[in-house]
Image 1 (cartoon, one colour):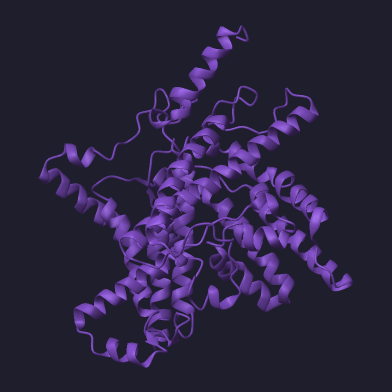
Image 2 (cartoon, helix red, strand yellow):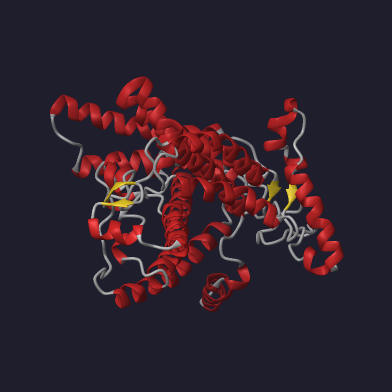
Length: 467
């Protein structure tokens, strides 16, 4: 495969196009759809079942318009069924019976298809990680004993308010179906659990509010401003990583280390730290951008209360301890997923320490396993970088047990800097080595930084004699 600085289609690489279906006749499209359906649902002998569910890279099918509906159905429909059932009482038996089927179908839909051409490594990585998380969502909805309950309910779908209960009981089939779908969508997008028993009802901490939540119009206007601002910041950060002359392999699909061997130790460390912070900030800006777009739809169209959409991240640079950083400043979107995969099993076996270690180990495992989707391989450095963060929390807990005081102030800040901003570089280095940094989030043709800012800076440098 050719390697290009601009990872929107390497030279010499002809990526399969989603427009193939449009180019065919209706008859050809029908044939392709029939073949896609056959490939999706034809199961192999039992001995090859795992390979059918998670095929080798060479055996994955490229996503096209013909097979996209099948892949989407494999992932979405099982969650729709479980999401509706988990909001009804006395459904635990059927949910647990459906859970392994749902897990299998979602994993098949995630892994059997190459959602985008391999040169878009970052998006493929993110989509694969999302698929794994949806498998865990199926486990959560399938296994939870009493279903999912809002904090203003006495049971799933049963409000505490008697008048509201009577109103719901009098609804017709269409209104009941609409309510069921609305509840499902809230559960599907509300991963932090705001207003639900598994989030707000179980110790969820949130960043400080900064918008005018009491004025819907002002809140929506500020959200639109945030979307544009995040787009520009994300563009600048991605361009900084992508135009690095000191680490020539990092901005390519081949990938390379963030620590340039050609630089002395101190400049090498400074550059690696700058790339690490830029990459981490780009993750935050991209996550917040998607979150803001979703909140704009839910508050503006679905008329949800703006207080249901607090900030996704806090001011992480103000963190005064590992606990402050990971429980409040960093996003809590995947909190429940990691608890299900590692935290709850670890807590059951080894108590609080097992829960902390299990949660971060689960995070590292999923972040490492998601390289499968980008044509890569599991990276122990990524897995153990996440797991090592648990050690900081355990040390803080031990300090509190011994002294009765919590880690805080400048000592806590130094610990966070050492553990997250320096120690976490191994994680970013693992992503960079597998070409994840080689994909621009903002395509070059839509990048103000690449098309306007950098050329302007270059012209000024030439005019003053710096170049």
